[in-house]
Length: 284
Image 1: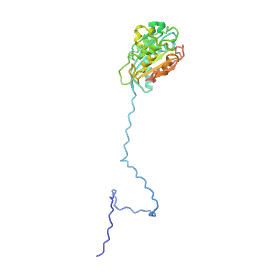
Image 2: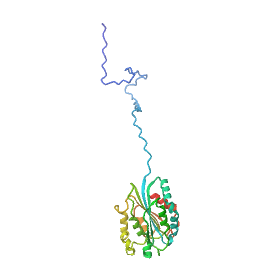
Image 3: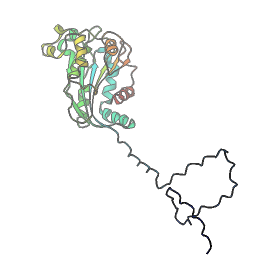
Image 4: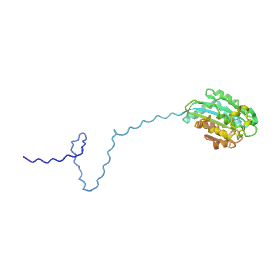
């Protein structure tokens, strides 16, 4: 009886056999490296496409934001303001379409647009004739009414400069702003070619005394009050006005104000209607 070969001890670790393998490791075709020679690290195995993380879905294109927008125009209607008043009259009927076109080009959608007009002169010189107020006109439904009101304005009176622009700002701030819509913009636009009179309660008609702050500091508090008539994030003030008392004070102190300096006494003749529309659309 012949002697049997002594069996080789089994490996202690588990062995993984790839499908289709005979279980016998293939012989290397290269000579073994000398003892102590450095061995080159094997490259990491390529990640299987089955284990790659899924590509996230492409998000839908964002829809343009929609707003409810209220605009109050405070227009100096003293004698020198004929050029810009004529522009406003000429374009009143197309104002809604022009604003909507500009907004669309900027990727903005307005669900509701209303406009209101405050025409002012000088209370010291013109008394009660120093102010004409309109209600809010919803556009385009009341576009003809808006045009009729604007066309009724006459550039006259005012006495000497300055004019009662700060009173107009106060009345605009206290407008009955819309409460509809998820997102709102409350925009006040001032058009004047003169500096502003200091606030002076004794010169006001009795019906306005309680609607206008006593001084500029109180007017500033009214604008900055986060619990006031205008929303902290929705309010905007656009000034087409000369550098001078009142307007420079506002642009230097108040937030959310854009000041386009005008030429004093020139009636805003240098102001282009397209600039007005673009400034309003930029404020939305």
